[in-house]
Image 1 (cartoon, rainbow, N blue to C red):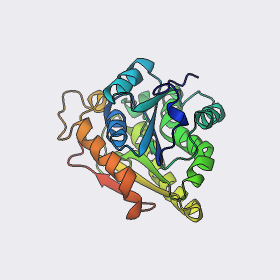
Image 2 (image 1 turned 45 degrees about the horizontal axis):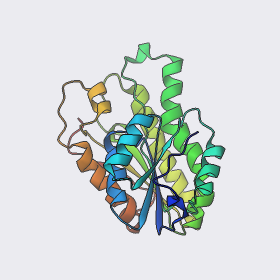
Image 3 (image 1 turned 90 degrees about the vertical axis):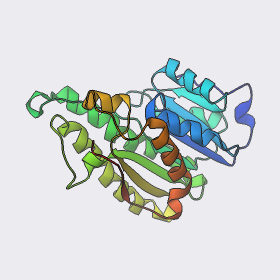
Image 4 (image 1 turned 135 degrees about the vertical axis):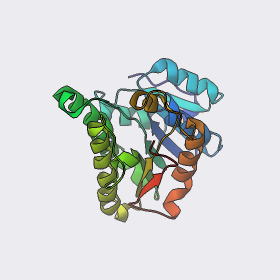
Amino acid sequence: MIFIPLQEGIYKMEYQHYYLVTGASSGIGFASALVLAQNKRNKVIAIARNTTKLESLRQASENKIGILPFDLEKGNLTALVDDLKKKGVNHLTGVIHNAGYLVSKKFEEISIQDLQKIYEVNVFAPFRLTQHLLPLLKKAKGAHIVNISSVGGIQGSVKFDGLSAYSSSKGALCVLTECLANELKDEKIKVNCLALGAVQTEMLHQAFPGYEAPLKANEMGEFVAWFTENGSKFFNGKILPVALSTP
């Protein structure tokens, strides 16, 4: 595991708020991290597997974002949290579980390997990462966990061919949100879920080639960042559709 600091000694500084964003190498995660980092009170730590893309994020933020190349599917979460603490992250005000994986195949063609990977990234990773981050979240005394789901994961929404594994995993994330909001309420940790509609991202292109979404990633990123900072004042345990189209 490699932690690439913002600059020499940056984590010796005291920040009012620390935010962790997963899946931050592109799309909505990339945009959300950039917006959060614009606030001088915030320190943003961006997680993704792709070191090159994370470096692009760091440069785009004018060196305001700390980047952490890490594989949420296979990485050592205990070591990750220990490294965060060593770097001076003494609490977490917010976590955006944005990392996701999509398989677009007919139901009968989805292999056990496909199913395991999609649930590992979309469900097990946010579940296990939240467990490991709880000590830091509790210290914030008012933390906010934001799970990024899909309108396809909401019961009664429009469903599409080829997305049975993806949509069902996002449905599991929605229910996990409700469970965590209940279990963590005494710790003053709020947990909400944004069920996103069509946004112009690489994942959308994979699922619906040629479709043009009504929203760009940077537009949704602005909303996700705002909600992470402010949404816990108004919501807890909610699955909120954020969609202009599906798709």
